[in-house]
Length: 187
Ligand code: GRF
Image (tube, rainbow, N blue to C red; front, side, top):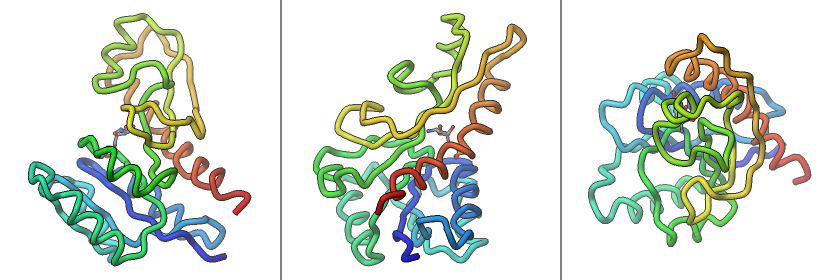
Protein backbone atom coordinates (compact mmCIF):
# COMPACT_ATOMS: atom_id res chain seq x y z
CA UNK A 1 0.00 0.00 0.00
CA UNK A 2 1.26 3.46 -0.89
CA UNK A 3 0.71 5.49 2.22
CA UNK A 4 -0.53 9.07 2.03
CA UNK A 5 2.12 11.47 3.23
CA UNK A 6 0.70 13.27 6.23
CA UNK A 7 1.56 16.26 8.39
CA UNK A 8 0.17 16.60 11.92
CA UNK A 9 -0.33 20.10 13.35
CA UNK A 10 -0.10 20.38 17.13
CA UNK A 11 0.10 23.02 19.86
CA UNK A 12 0.23 21.11 23.13
CA UNK A 13 0.47 17.66 24.65
CA UNK A 14 0.43 15.76 21.39
CA UNK A 15 -1.23 12.63 22.74
CA UNK A 16 -3.21 12.29 19.50
CA UNK A 17 0.01 12.74 17.54
CA UNK A 18 1.59 9.96 19.61
CA UNK A 19 -1.40 7.74 18.91
CA UNK A 20 -1.35 8.45 15.17
CA UNK A 21 2.36 7.69 15.00
CA UNK A 22 1.62 4.37 16.70
CA UNK A 23 -1.22 3.58 14.25
CA UNK A 24 0.87 4.54 11.24
CA UNK A 25 3.42 1.83 12.07
CA UNK A 26 0.87 -0.71 10.91
CA UNK A 27 1.50 -1.59 7.24
CA UNK A 28 -2.21 -1.52 6.54
CA UNK A 29 -2.76 1.95 7.97
CA UNK A 30 -3.24 4.36 5.04
CA UNK A 31 -0.95 7.21 6.12
CA UNK A 32 2.66 7.83 7.08
CA UNK A 33 3.55 10.82 9.22
CA UNK A 34 6.27 12.71 7.40
CA UNK A 35 6.14 16.06 9.16
CA UNK A 36 4.94 17.70 12.38
CA UNK A 37 4.15 21.40 12.53
CA UNK A 38 3.85 23.02 15.93
CA UNK A 39 3.13 26.62 16.89
CA UNK A 40 4.36 26.42 20.47
CA UNK A 41 8.02 25.86 21.18
CA UNK A 42 7.16 24.59 24.65
CA UNK A 43 4.67 21.98 23.41
CA UNK A 44 5.20 18.60 25.03
CA UNK A 45 4.09 16.91 21.82
CA UNK A 46 7.30 17.79 19.98
CA UNK A 47 8.97 15.00 21.93
CA UNK A 48 7.02 12.41 19.91
CA UNK A 49 8.35 13.83 16.65
CA UNK A 50 11.88 13.79 18.05
CA UNK A 51 11.62 10.27 19.48
CA UNK A 52 10.35 8.92 16.17
CA UNK A 53 12.77 10.90 14.00
CA UNK A 54 9.94 12.73 12.26
CA UNK A 55 10.97 16.13 10.89
CA UNK A 56 9.26 18.93 12.76
CA UNK A 57 8.86 22.62 12.30
CA UNK A 58 8.13 25.14 15.02
CA UNK A 59 6.31 28.13 13.63
CA UNK A 60 5.41 31.39 15.25
CA UNK A 61 1.81 31.70 14.16
CA UNK A 62 1.76 35.31 15.34
CA UNK A 63 3.88 36.10 12.28
CA UNK A 64 1.76 37.00 9.29
CA UNK A 65 3.78 34.82 6.95
CA UNK A 66 3.43 31.61 8.97
CA UNK A 67 1.08 29.99 6.48
CA UNK A 68 3.43 30.76 3.61
CA UNK A 69 6.29 29.07 5.44
CA UNK A 70 4.05 26.11 6.33
CA UNK A 71 2.90 25.74 2.71
CA UNK A 72 6.48 25.70 1.48
CA UNK A 73 7.33 22.94 3.92
CA UNK A 74 4.19 20.94 3.10
CA UNK A 75 5.15 21.10 -0.56
CA UNK A 76 8.71 20.04 0.19
CA UNK A 77 7.49 16.91 1.96
CA UNK A 78 4.77 16.29 -0.67
CA UNK A 79 2.09 16.29 2.02
CA UNK A 80 -1.29 14.90 0.94
CA UNK A 81 -3.20 15.04 4.23
CA UNK A 82 -3.11 17.43 7.20
CA UNK A 83 -4.35 16.26 10.60
CA UNK A 84 -5.09 19.01 13.09
CA UNK A 85 -4.57 17.45 16.51
CA UNK A 86 -5.03 20.11 19.13
CA UNK A 87 -3.77 22.91 16.87
CA UNK A 88 -4.86 26.10 18.62
CA UNK A 89 -4.75 28.49 15.71
CA UNK A 90 -7.41 29.19 13.13
CA UNK A 91 -6.13 28.73 9.60
CA UNK A 92 -7.12 31.00 6.77
CA UNK A 93 -9.66 30.33 4.05
CA UNK A 94 -6.89 30.63 1.44
CA UNK A 95 -4.84 27.94 3.16
CA UNK A 96 -7.88 25.66 3.52
CA UNK A 97 -8.71 26.08 -0.17
CA UNK A 98 -5.22 24.96 -1.13
CA UNK A 99 -5.83 21.69 0.75
CA UNK A 100 -9.53 21.27 0.03
CA UNK A 101 -10.91 18.11 1.70
CA UNK A 102 -7.38 17.24 2.75
CA UNK A 103 -7.44 18.81 6.22
CA UNK A 104 -9.13 16.98 9.07
CA UNK A 105 -9.58 17.97 12.70
CA UNK A 106 -10.48 16.24 15.94
CA UNK A 107 -12.85 18.09 18.27
CA UNK A 108 -13.83 17.18 21.83
CA UNK A 109 -17.63 17.29 21.47
CA UNK A 110 -20.41 15.84 19.39
CA UNK A 111 -20.50 18.51 16.69
CA UNK A 112 -22.47 20.57 15.76
CA UNK A 113 -22.84 20.92 19.52
CA UNK A 114 -20.16 22.85 21.42
CA UNK A 115 -18.01 24.27 18.69
CA UNK A 116 -14.99 26.26 19.86
CA UNK A 117 -13.20 26.20 23.20
CA UNK A 118 -14.07 25.15 26.79
CA UNK A 119 -16.34 22.36 25.63
CA UNK A 120 -16.33 20.34 28.87
CA UNK A 121 -17.31 23.31 31.04
CA UNK A 122 -20.23 24.09 28.76
CA UNK A 123 -21.33 20.45 28.48
CA UNK A 124 -21.46 20.12 32.29
CA UNK A 125 -23.23 23.46 32.70
CA UNK A 126 -25.93 22.37 30.24
CA UNK A 127 -26.33 19.03 32.08
CA UNK A 128 -25.87 17.07 28.86
CA UNK A 129 -26.48 13.32 29.12
CA UNK A 130 -24.08 12.35 26.41
CA UNK A 131 -20.88 13.66 24.86
CA UNK A 132 -17.93 12.45 22.80
CA UNK A 133 -15.63 13.47 20.00
CA UNK A 134 -15.87 14.26 16.31
CA UNK A 135 -13.42 13.92 13.44
CA UNK A 136 -14.40 16.23 10.59
CA UNK A 137 -13.13 17.84 7.42
CA UNK A 138 -12.00 21.42 7.90
CA UNK A 139 -13.74 24.16 5.97
CA UNK A 140 -13.82 27.95 6.48
CA UNK A 141 -16.42 27.68 9.26
CA UNK A 142 -14.97 26.95 12.70
CA UNK A 143 -15.61 23.29 13.58
CA UNK A 144 -18.18 23.31 10.81
CA UNK A 145 -16.91 20.92 8.10
CA UNK A 146 -18.47 17.59 7.16
CA UNK A 147 -18.37 15.00 9.92
CA UNK A 148 -16.35 11.87 9.15
CA UNK A 149 -16.92 9.98 12.38
CA UNK A 150 -18.18 10.48 15.94
CA UNK A 151 -17.87 8.44 19.12
CA UNK A 152 -19.93 9.05 22.23
CA UNK A 153 -20.37 8.03 25.85
CA UNK A 154 -22.92 8.67 28.58
CA UNK A 155 -22.10 11.31 31.16
CA UNK A 156 -22.32 10.22 34.79
CA UNK A 157 -23.43 12.43 37.69
CA UNK A 158 -19.97 12.05 39.17
CA UNK A 159 -18.20 13.34 36.04
CA UNK A 160 -16.22 16.57 36.16
CA UNK A 161 -14.11 18.50 33.65
CA UNK A 162 -11.10 16.25 34.15
CA UNK A 163 -12.98 12.96 33.87
CA UNK A 164 -14.87 14.17 30.78
CA UNK A 165 -11.58 15.17 29.21
CA UNK A 166 -10.01 11.80 29.94
CA UNK A 167 -12.99 9.83 28.66
CA UNK A 168 -13.21 11.99 25.55
CA UNK A 169 -9.52 11.64 24.81
CA UNK A 170 -9.67 7.86 25.21
CA UNK A 171 -12.36 7.86 22.52
CA UNK A 172 -10.29 10.22 20.36
CA UNK A 173 -7.48 7.67 20.24
CA UNK A 174 -9.91 5.28 18.53
CA UNK A 175 -11.81 7.85 16.48
CA UNK A 176 -8.90 9.60 14.74
CA UNK A 177 -7.30 6.44 13.26
CA UNK A 178 -10.72 5.02 12.36
CA UNK A 179 -11.69 8.22 10.57
CA UNK A 180 -8.44 8.13 8.55
CA UNK A 181 -9.09 4.53 7.54
CA UNK A 182 -12.63 5.53 6.58
CA UNK A 183 -11.66 8.40 4.29
CA UNK A 184 -9.14 6.31 2.38
CA UNK A 185 -11.15 3.09 2.30
CA UNK A 186 -12.16 3.36 -1.35
CA UNK A 187 -8.98 5.00 -2.62
C1 GRF B 1 -7.87 17.00 21.90
O1 GRF B 1 -8.70 16.72 22.98
C2 GRF B 1 -8.66 17.48 20.72
O2 GRF B 1 -9.98 17.10 20.75
C3 GRF B 1 -8.58 18.98 20.83
O3 GRF B 1 -7.34 19.24 21.41
C4 GRF B 1 -6.93 18.14 22.21
C5 GRF B 1 -5.51 17.84 21.87
O4 GRF B 1 -4.92 16.93 22.76
N1 GRF B 1 -8.76 19.56 19.54
P1 GRF B 1 -3.49 16.33 22.49
O5 GRF B 1 -2.54 17.49 22.28
O6 GRF B 1 -3.57 15.46 21.27
O7 GRF B 1 -3.14 15.55 23.73
